[in-house]
Length: 319
Length: 232
Image (cartoon, helix red, strand yellow):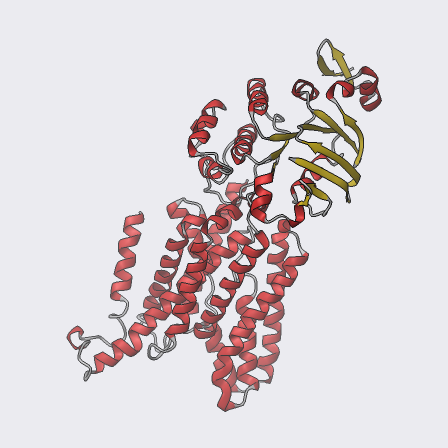
């Protein structure tokens, strides 16, 4: 199973940049004068890379949140981070003067990040055993944000509401490698920090009490891990929009396949999170639809049913 | 090591004070008397600011030094991740100079070596108690507080745990309901009732007939050197 998945993943990564609406003549890829050169280096490759690193951040972020909050349903997204980013972006789109709309990227980052700060504030007043309450707060926050988003819709014009809708569905449309750098930095920054705290993470995966007794500075480590995830997810959301389900689904799938504790799955979750989003994107842009199917739609289409499966399986094992 | 508990007060404890100077102790008391709370306050899980190790406040110790000095072994094994197995859990307990070899030996001695690759979540309550106990010995803190280390065990394992407790070189505090265990260990006894310290003294004085009657009424009956629950 592991080998099969790995081979499949290599195949996906290998073919993704070459398959698309416009067929590529491979011989021309290295010829700077040809159309294919532009198509490959400026569009396809950046897009596949954005997909990979976004997926990697979202999946690893989910893994870390699940460990730190000790709840297998907790991800930056189920806690309302994506809704926060969406709301802030919508505010940016509607209220910023047209010449500054490009800055709505910073708004989505700020939205994601302020939601995290809000959650920190709530988490501090709850004790470690109340992670379910935090999840409920996250859901309540999402509803609140959605309601606020509806208000923004009501006061936006047609063009603005179209931009908002496009953002909420997520998009991997990028041109050139420039957008990639912050994303790559965020992805490897997060990976580096999580790997650095691997042992601490393992102790947290037993219990807070045990980690404390083994000399781990729980509060400090949690803060570092959650900040690292929030910052990188903030960067990711601001570039590709809120893409749900990866943070939830990938850690669960990888755990089911590898049957190892989460601290040993850091690299696998990072890698397969990336591959999953690349694969979803590959499907999305090759369906032959009139306009491209947004990436958020594809991940939710695959992720939704799986989420239900996980819930049912979890319930069975608890009975 | 000198432990000084100075007027520790929590919602469940009222101004508890005592000192242990390189000395073991047994903590006894009825259900809900605050035994576990006291243990958690000592190791810093509840930050009261009133516990001192060799004159230094536990709250001000750096995390690593605190872990070398104090450990609490809970009565229930709590592991979040489904895939952390017994061996991995115990490896996290290797501390203060204990090695993987010590771990193997301990697992064999407690006859739980076949559980090495079992998930911590799949083993029975008695087995997980033995795993916790082994983890406590491997952690090898200057002072280890065991919370009911024999509660879910069969008689054979109770004896093993008793022997291993005696052989363990670090300082120990043992929370228990088992008067026979307390009597055989012979440590100084601290007795709590509803959050108050009602007895603190030598084992011999504690098991004095008048004292037993004062603390337990007629619910305990002494038969030779054994203490029985007096079902009527």
